[in-house]
Length: 228
Length: 405
Image (cartoon, rainbow over all chains, first blue to last red; front, side, top):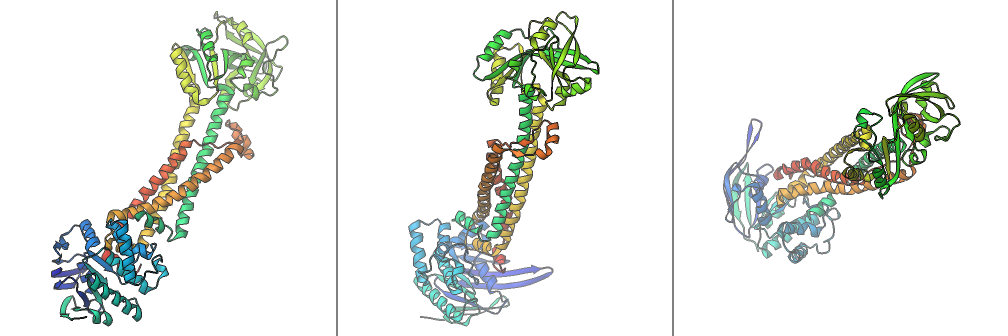
C-alpha cells in the first residue's frame, strides 16, 4: 500500500516560487491499475517522481508498506527503489549496449539473484510481453513498441511492490499502445503488481480501474471503475 | 555486469575511443622512444668513457689520489693482482705508474700526467690504442723512448709524430729528472679534459727514469658491467687499506649525467602522464555528459552510486588496457629493432663526436620502464576518471530523465 499524506512541492526559480503540488493525500492499494491524468504542467510527473523517491517533497510524507521513504538516506533510497519500485519511462530508457534479455536481467543482477532464477524470470517476462523471439536483440534493433515492452519486463523483473510509468504510450503508435496496455493489464492481474501511470492517453485512461485527476498541483477528482 | 557494460560503453562512440586509444598509444611510444634514445646516448657516452680510458675499477694507495706523491704506491700489488686475476668476473687487468710532469717541446710547454703502461695489458682494459692516428701503441723506437700524446697536446706543443719532447718530473728520491721522448703517435678520445693532461709512455721506461719499484694504479675491466659494485665490495672487504673505486667514483660526472638523465626521464614521464590524464578526463567527461539521461535512469532503477562510479572508472581502465599494450608493444618492437641496427645520425656526426658520442645511436631502455609505464598508465587512467565519475554521481535522476539525451 502506498500512503501519500499532505504532499507539497515548491520549486524556486529565481525569485519566483512555483507550487507544483499542493496538499496531495492519496492511498493506493496493492494491485490497483491507476492512471494519474491531467493537462501538461499539472504536476503528474512531479507526483510520480516523488512517489518513486526520485524527487523529495517540500512537505509531507510517502509511506510505502511500512517504509517512510522521504526519511531514507540517498543510498538506502536507491536500494529501496531497486527492491520495491519498477520504472517505465516515456522514452523507454533501455541500456543501449545490452540485449533485451540483458536489460531485463540487469536489475536482478543488481539484486544479486542466482543464475537460474534470473534466467527463468527473464525468459518468463519476455514471453509475457511477447518478445521471446527477440531476446538477443539490442534496443536499436527493435521498434519503439518492442523497446517499451522490454522496459515493462525490466520494471517487473525485480518483483517490485508497484510500477510507476510516466506516459508510457506517449511515443508509441496506437497499435503498439493498445498492445502494451493489454500486456500491462495482464501482468497487473497475473503478478498482482500495482501500476501507476501518468498519461494523457484516453486508451490508458479507459483501461485504468482508478483515475486520479490533477490540475494545478491539486487532486480534483479520484474515481474508481470496476473492470474485468 | 558492470564491467561488461563498461567495456561495451567504450565502443558506443568508437571513433572517439579509438582517437583516445591512438593518442595514448602514441604518447607511450613517444615517451619510450625519447627515453630509449636519451638513455642510449647517455649509455653510449658512459660506455665510451669506460671503454676508452676509465675502465670499471681502479685501485690506488689511499694517499695517492689526494697527494699524488710518487712514493704513494700500492703496497700489496702481488696479492691484489693475484686475487683479481683469479676472479671469474675479470676480463682484463693492467698496472700503471704515473707521475706529474712538465712537458716541453720547441713549440710550447704544458703540465701532464705521464702514464707508464704495459701496452699489451692496457689493451685489455682501455681503448686508447683504438684512438691512435697511426696505430703505433708504444712500439720500440730507436734511441729515444716512445711517447703518445693527445691531439690537443700536440697542437699546444706544436709537436707532431717524430717530434722530440722533454719531460721533467721528480723521481722516487725526490730529485728532478729530465728525459727525452719521441712522439710515436697521437690520440684523440673526444674528451678534452682527459686528453689535455694525459700522455702515455712504456712502464719500463718510466720506471727506469723514476727509479720506482712499485705501481700507482691497477685498472680492472670486468666481463659484465653489472658486477662492478659487487666485485668492488669484495675487493674492499679483502683489501681494506686501499683506495678502490668504480668508474662512478673515478668519473663522478658520468654518474651525475646518469642521475640527471633519470631525473629528466621522470619529468618527461610526468608530462606524458599529464597529457594522458587530460585526454582521459576530457573523453570521460564527454561520455558522462552525453549519457546523463541514461546514468539518471540507472540511478532511478536502483543502481547504486558506487556501481555507477566504478562503471565510469572501468571504462577508463579499458581504454588504458587497450592502448597500454599497443603502446608498449609498438615501442618494444621499435626499440628492439633500432637497438640492433642503430639510429644513423651521421648528418650530425661532427657535433656528436665533440661531446664524446658516436653518430650511430643504439636506443636502450631498461625493462623496468615498461613495467613502470604500464603501472603509470593504469594509475593515470583511474585517477583521471575520478572527476568524470564524481560528476556522474552528482546527477539528479529526476532532472536528467527530463533531458533530451
